[in-house]
Image (cartoon, rainbow, N blue to C red; front, top):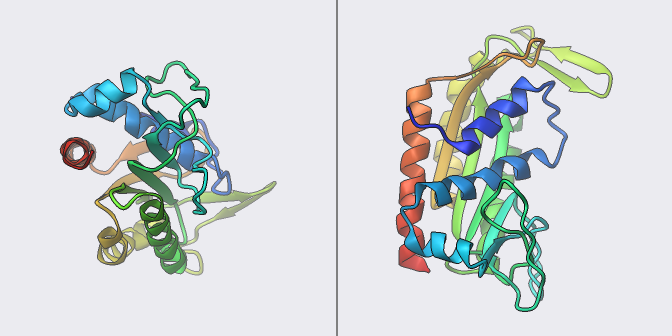
Length: 236
């Protein structure tokens, strides 16, 4: 069965727990691996060649000179001439300053209280998709959302823990289907590719994690990689 680096990173996000939802770097760490999966797939000769020659790079800061726009979790594009390029093992895609966006990725995780935050999350997703297009009219916009379907969940705010109870605080499994439906209705149209990753994680020791279902996740993610490869070759 195929394995993908991004999916492994999502799993590590929870199995090395506890997952802290206010950590702003988690989305970046997940998005970085999409470009590695795209490279390993090798279906876009243009993408692989440009990564190898470092004419295209991943911009950790998501800032393009001369363009005012909100950064995304993953920003890949033309390297600015003369700006130093950095290799970061084990990644094939090097880091640097980008002049534009060829591929932009925004990552969100819905772990609990999904319906309560769905409108804000949808606005954030579509807003970021708009910012990618501000940097490049042809930008391939990718949204990735993990949706928890565990029977219970514990979140953390500093030293305090908050457990779902199924009443005032619904369990993830009670809201997951409706949350996914709303995302597909409202957020998916903002992106060229919109990937929903259903999983189960309680965020309690020993921090178990499982994909729901793994076959669907692998097929959906693999198909999205192939479509992005084809789209990249057409647009760039």
